[in-house]
Image (cartoon, rainbow, N blue to C red; front, top):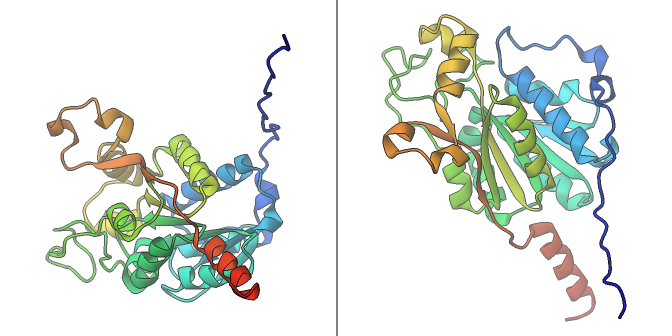
Length: 287
């Protein structure tokens, strides 16, 4: 009797993480305010990219306009800093022209869900293979602290001096409803968890959306009487969220009003660029 075949699992070679490999030192220091969560998200993203093993030249990072959209200026990948709300449109063109690239869109809640909302919906519908990181701080921090599509009701901003009366968008709910095949949420507070979530999003084939809750202490925090950036993180990110793994074990009253963290939706479905390429090949053959 022949012995059963032995299948060896391939293991990733552990390479020490070095920030200098991924950053452009001549573009530093960054513009973000003390206490801003964007720097923490940048760190988590770079560590996730490192763990993915994807070479720098095979990554293209795209952004629009806003505080979070300054990120591509600091990293040593193929990068585009584009128009307000149009990052996903540019990223779509890049992916169709160079489908071998890993395309990562770094955007804010205003950039992605307000002026860029139409592009956001349709990239999810098409299921184009790109990772969209939405840094949600509930304000337009770069232009003076106006309320955004994710600003909580009753919150004070420069354009809602008596309290915001518009209900906020659920970015994850909208992404799932529009057709994204991977939807997750993380926070700048839960940084190790965020690294793992971003890594899973990068490795997923199809449109992957990660809604990342972080804090703007300069505009949102001061206007809404938070005493410090750390208090904002504790209140909004730590106490205001719950892991999907914990949520299954908690009674409804313990999760009421809290945002769920972790992978919220993940399915396999045809990816747009592959379908498009196959269509061109079939037409070329005269089918």
